[in-house]
Every structure is written in C-alpha cells, then in structure tokens.
Image (tube, rainbow, N blue to C red; front, top):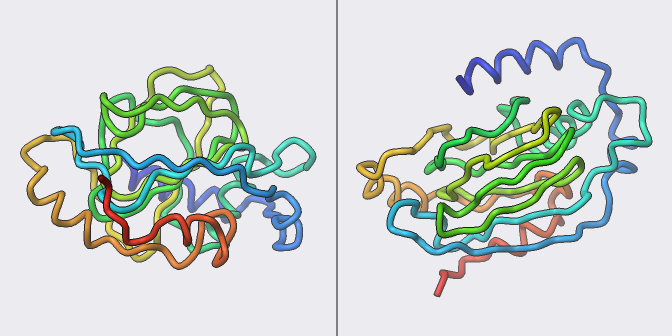
Length: 203
C-alpha cells in the first residue's frame, strides 16, 4: 500500500509546480515545539531515546498559490526526508522499527493516538508537523472529511510496518539501531530535532 502510494506521489511530483528554496524558507515559521517521550507499554515498544516531536503551525499554507501538500512535500524533500506519500493515517496501531517518520497536515484536522493505547491523543490541523521516531505507535482516531497528510521517511532507512506483538523482540533490537537524522525535516541541519534527539534513555 505505502509503496504504491509512494510511486503515485513520485509521478505526481514530476508534473507539479514546486516552490523554490527561497519561497520555502519564507513559508516555514519559527518552531513551537513539544517533545513527548513514550514508555514501552508492553505492546508498542516506542523509542527508548528519542521523543516524538510536534511542531504547531510550522508551515504557512494559506498565503500562497501553491498546493498545501506540495509545499509540505517540498519542505521535507529539501531536508533529506523522502519516500513520501499523501493520504490519511491508518486507523490501526502500527509502528516502524527501522526508520523515522514525519507527517505534515496539509488539509483539515484530526486526532491521532501516539505512543500506543497508553500514550496520548494529539489534535492536529493544517500546518502542523509530527515527527515519529522509530518504534512510536500511531493510529488515526478521527478526522475531518478533508483531512490530508503528507508522510515521509529518512532516505537511508528501511520501511517496515509492525502490527503484531510477535514482532516485538526483533523490532526492539532494530529500533535502537536507527540513527539520529542529520537534518530536521522542517528546519534543516540546525533544527530542534537534531538537539532534542540526544542519546538519553527514558526513565
């Protein structure tokens, strides 16, 4: 499913009108960051070192002629986060054990459960960005009819989708091996995620 979405999105990007780098910089706002470090809940491992990051209103989408999804996609791509897709979020709990993920809301609003059933429900709307370190459980709880998300991953990671508790032992070993990104998907090399994702373990 995701591979098909990525192929479709690649084809779409070939014919889209993309903002240049100067325009992109003007559309990126100063970060209003929140970091949440989730514990292993016995089902979803989450990440022992890197917290989930939320940027509120990180990307200005209204005052431009460019398509909102194109803007977000271009911001992520310019910072080395690719393999992108555009859709909603799965409504079942899942996580990725070999790759970090970023999601930017292009349209509408929704409520996303992060960290597993014992985690938190985040309210997100257009312009918000959520960065999910490898191992972080997530699923859609509810959303507006026009809800559209742009998702992307680090280019040097391997996409996988974990939903079964039988995968936990091997998944946990893979999660700790996923390296910190060199660039924040929104703010680049000096972005908050490069500082927030230190080698500290959860308590």
